[in-house]
Every structure is written in structure tokens, then in C-alpha cells.
Image 1 (spheres, helix red, strand yellow):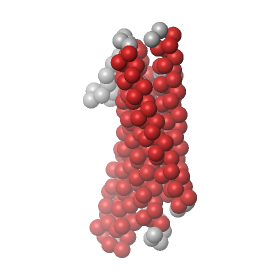
Image 2 (tube, rainbow, N blue to C red):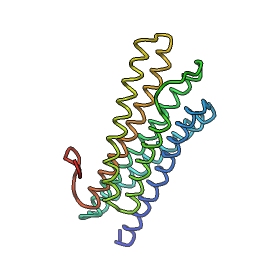
Image 3 (cartoon, rainbow, N blue to C red):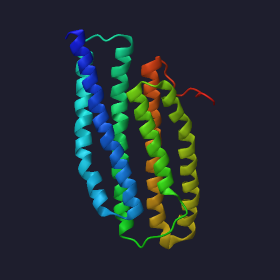
Image 4 (cartoon, rainbow, N blue to C red):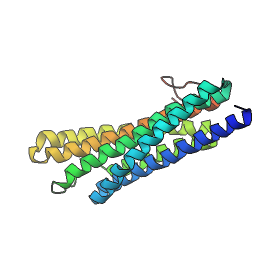
Length: 222
């Protein structure tokens, strides 16, 4: 494979990953709208999109592995391919979290609506913003932007902890509302996991651009 063809293949790999990322991002948006609106049609759309996301994950993995097998990429190209393989897995799991959310929404739909004191739309907006920013940092090869995603994760974690405390109290004190509160608690947990996947993507961008592994280390400003 000539260097020109190799770099064209890298561009194709990036483009395919971004298509998949757009699908996963849309799935999260639809799943949280399904929660807000109690809309089963949006649930159907999220679940219908999952096979396409899974198919692209397999295609991206295979293309990345083929590039590693056919070439001996050095330095930044090698880091890029390794980062894509890892980002690919996290993007697919974002799609999985969307499916998990709509499964809970379907359960909630069978029960009378309750006004629980947990701001799921705000939590969804923050975790969704993390995903968008992490993906933009990948598009722009911007490690500084990726670092900004890492600082947002604590906010999502704090909101999830608050939801756990609030909803846990409802589960213990109001048995009639326990199942409803439990479903909302799982949705909050799914959104917290979306934030975790965005953090992983951001860390992989930093690894690609700077050659620095920031996992399990103190982050900037920590």
C-alpha cells in the first residue's frame, strides 16, 4: 500500500467513525427526549438504529486491524489507529446506553407519571455536551478541547450521586413509587456512563495528539 493510499484509508477510517458517532449521538438525544415526552415512537427509532451502529463498529474495527496488518505505521499514525479502535468501542457503548434508557422509558410509560425531583434533561444535556466536545476534539485533533471534557465529568458524577440519594430515599420511603424511581435512577446511571465514555474518548484524543496516556493520572487543574 502506497503512503497516499494509506493516508486515504486513514481518512476513510476517520469518516466512518464520525458517521457512527453521529448515529450514537442522535440516539442519546432521542432517548432523553423519549423520557421527557413519554414518546414510544422515539423509543422505536433508537432501537431501530442500534443494528446500524453495531455494524459500523465491526466495519471500523476490521478496517483499523487491516491497516495495522498491511502497514507498519509509526508514531502519530499508529497512535491514531489505536485511538480509533478504542474510541470506536466507546461510541458503540454510547449507543448501548441510549437503548438502555428507552427500555426504562417503555417501563415508565406503563405507570402514571410522577414528578420526581431529579433533572434528567439537564443531566442529559451535560453528558451529551461532553460527547459532542470529545468528538469535536477528535475532528480537530485538539488536545486542549479534549482536556476540557475531563473537567466536565465531575459535574455529571455529582448529578448522578444526587439522583442516587434522592431516588434512593423515595424507593425506601414510598413503596408505591419505588419502581418509577428505580427506572429514573437507572436512566441517571446510564447518562453518567455516557459521560464516562465521553471522558474515555477525550483521553484517547490526548493520547493520539500528544502521545500521553492520561488515564488514572491526575488531570490538569486537579
